[in-house]
Length: 608
Image 1: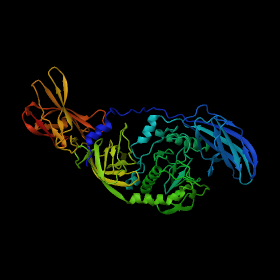
Image 2 (image 1 turned 45 degrees about the vertical axis):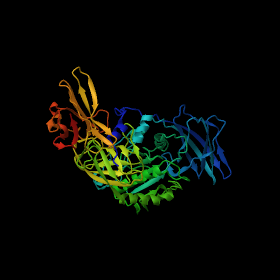
Image 3 (image 1 turned 120 degrees about the vertical axis):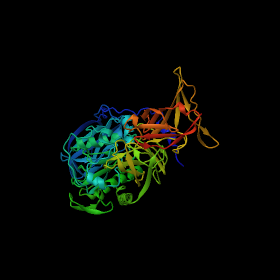
């Protein structure tokens, strides 16, 4: 059954009169950082431990949680634990601060993972022990307040505001079939550096291997503020590890949102694979995964991201090859522990899942469905225009029915996204009105090159459906009251009387016996009445001029007063025209719209 497109548009867009404005100069959340250093020179045996005095948190204000990391210089292997308190009386359990065994910073220190603590934390203690004799020389505790992410920024993150895909490597992009999934940019997640790092230069590499990581446990008080967690990782990598930027190319949170990591775009060299980062793309899923496995949403986003990169670079997801920087022969999709360093990353529960990830990525690149895209107004399979409303039909397009009700419209619903690749090979992500297993309504992206384009639909599991469309400068179509592209239009009459009063009148009425809208006879009224047709469609806002718009009522030309975007509605175009009085008594007539020589679907009116 076809969705009533016009009714759906009103549902999705009513009360969203204008898209929420985004201030270009909006400040990123304030990330605050402070360190405490302890000179220890402590000798440890198997039966001894060093426990600190109570340490007051040095930050005056913490939001939305406190992130703590550690770095130390030691001879031998040590085990660091931390506990916390909000009042200095009641203490948490001792939390292990697991070391990244192969991570050594510029100061020659070993560094820990991050711990996330309640923002009310005021006191901490550390305890250092060793299984074998060891000596601890110094310890630094790093306290980070990542700043609460503003609600508007969180909404844009969920909507995945950036639309344009990375097309730096045009030759590879031309060969690629699988689209890049939506990625939240550094600016969007509030990176203090913005899009470009200020801590050093960037380098690029030819990616041959895709490396999967884990990070700290998200069991702390994140409260949905995953962007703050990403800012915590960035701060720790830059100021504690002494790196130029966050180490990973991409970060995936547990809801499946993908964040841009290291600045520089596609193929930039990260810092994540035991110092042999050439030839790699590093992806980290937020979580510990020592005993728990990643959520399905995070895994699905990981597979989509790996499928895009594997397809772009011609990498066999289930194959093995020599990694030149390390000299090792490893899986093309590998875990961090497959490198030369000693580490459990990406976690004992996650690592055994990688063979299944490789197989699923391979399947995503091999099993494509089909999708047919038509005008959501006329249901015509002819050309489509940029910024037009489109209906796409297929199977397994989404896992559930969801309606986009935000402003701007989301780019992902139920995990489904739509990408359009135009004739110039530029990829743009479409904004979504509605998704269901068999139908998607989306807004064709702006600025597409004319000619043949490919529509790519990736559902929540990453399964791809593809189809082709023709993009034209205009593709006029009018909405019908019965959402079938014919019969009575979705429109109203505007009557202006001699005294200047204005009345809006319906053109159609719902007939319950027929279960459809039928035309109401139009009474053109007294000679002094001016009667105007106000109709709605899509695909004609790109007209060359108002003079290039022709609207005929029963073969009679009308005066077209307006043909363009309907203010406050996504993709909806409006047509205002005077109805000629010469039509009085004509009865059933055709409504024919032509824009720049292109004809729209023909609708029906009734004139008294």
